[in-house]
Amino acid sequence: MSTEHWPIARPASARRAPSPGERIAAALRKSPIYVDPSLASALPKGRRRELLAHMRRSPVPVYVVLVPLVKGGTWEDPDQLLTVVHDRLGRDGAYLSLDDFQDQLAARQWGGTREQQQNTRYAAQVPFFLDEMKDAPLADRLIRAVDLIAAGRGKAEYEAATAHLGRTRSSTGSGKSDDGGGVPLPAVLGAAGLGAAAVAGLAVWRWRRTGRVPPPSRHRLPRTVLATALRANEEELREQAAREVVAFGELLDRTDVDASAPRVRALLTEALDAYQAAGKVLDAARGLPDLAGVLVLVDRGRDALESARSLAGGGREIPASPLCFFNPLHGDSAVAVNWRPLGSRERLRVKACHDCAKAVRAHRTPQVLLDRVDGRPVPYFEVDADDSLWARTGYGQLRGDLVQRILRGDLRR
Image 1 (spheres, one colour):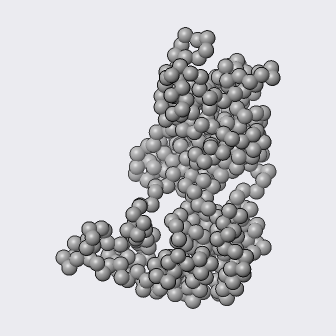
Image 2: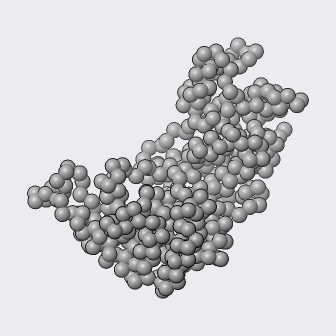
Image 3: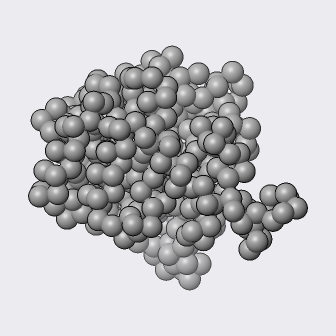
């Protein structure tokens, strides 16, 4: 069930600025090559002009989108990136990007025949398997892929480039290579099975070549976001929180899972409610504690969404991992500790990051998130509970109804 069936009222703060996908689409309307500033040196302007000349010779419109791919970030994998960009641009054609493995490209085509779409996918993979492309500049690999798309020879060249991968199979037909590793799937299935196994076969070859398997897809708030937020001032943190709300909204937009199971449906509802709550807090945020709350809510929503996807795919429900009780900007809470608030006899069981947990056990004061009362800084949890939802709920660790309280208007009493 697609989240298109789940109505979402977008918060005003998330609507004010164009989303990352919209910004890329706007740039592609001016030039079919988009390069993130952080990757500018990988494709110098002179090579961009050369690449553009090859793209213009293609009968299929070609778009190149080069941005960093980071698990848990705005762009996690090439399929996600290209799907969003195509949706925002609204133009069919072949879209190329970096893959989420070093030195590899990815592509997807909208429009044309199924054979042409397969050709485009294969064309992007070919340079990785060619000896002459080893350590070649990015421009050379992109030009090779574009030329194959234009000539309609992606699949044929892929089959030729990978034909040698099955030659190490033993004569017993056991499906094992001489070195004991698994045989790449293209070699096992032959040319007829390549269409169904292209992605899986390439993943096996990546493992054999790099010694590592592709990491599982994760959708939690990236820890780099929190590391940056910890060093940010209020204005910077507000901008970052807005970006995370937008990114989570886009993640929800493109999520398509079977929500027929009650628990999956409940988790999807939790994710959507957390998104709504994050938007409401962002719109009303007055300081660092509120902005930290936005990140807490996005993190809760991502946890719920990840768990829903796991269950819908036949996996297990994934326990939520709250952010540090003492300062959510510290990141995940890795340790549960017994903590007694100042002036209280009651001990609370809270989850904290390693450093804060270590401080509590050593009877030292953790590095806590500060709020302001009458112009002076105080730990957020020492603010009068009647005046602070974060103090009342410990950012959701002391009460399980944080999201519901925000949605009913309890952020400001």
